[in-house]
Amino acid sequence: MDNQDKQSWCEYGEDLEKQFLVDVSDYPVSFMRNPAKSENKYTHDFYGMFPVDLKTIQTKFRTADRYGIDPDYAITINRKDIERYYRLYKNIILILDIRFESDHSIRFVSLQTLVRHIKNNNAKEHFYKDRVDDNQGNAKSSFVFDYRWFDELQQR
Image (cartoon, rainbow, N blue to C red; front, side, top):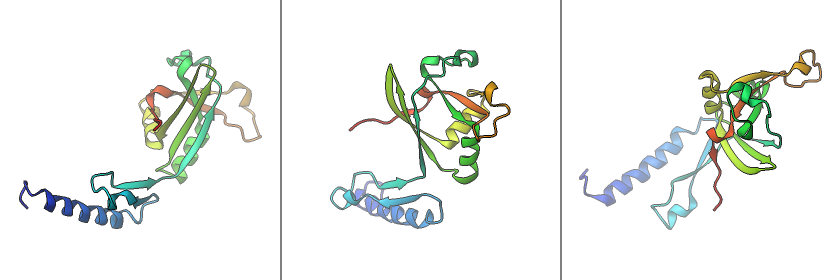
């Protein structure tokens, strides 16, 4: 194909988009063609549907400085939740609805990013002293993250 033949490259790109949808049909996520492509072939190609879980976080982790994280930006996510996600939903996205008195932001992060922070020892594990003998299903530990590590969902 001639590198200067834009029309041919656009048509080839459309064929690749169709093939991509076939190739990912067995994945545990879904993609659909952007309906706006029929009117604007230069708009983004797809919408993706991934498993998503919402975490509403209203309390700062005040002693996070023990773990090298500024308490103004510290959040926790239970170990047992991360383990369950990893077992069941490897492609899950977490929506973090952070509602601190001094800040409200909505962040999003993939499970893979959380696991990478844990493996790289950026996120430290906090064990709850009052839950050592818990038999009610409460998490016995959580990982402490700085929510600024994660992308913020932008308004229109």
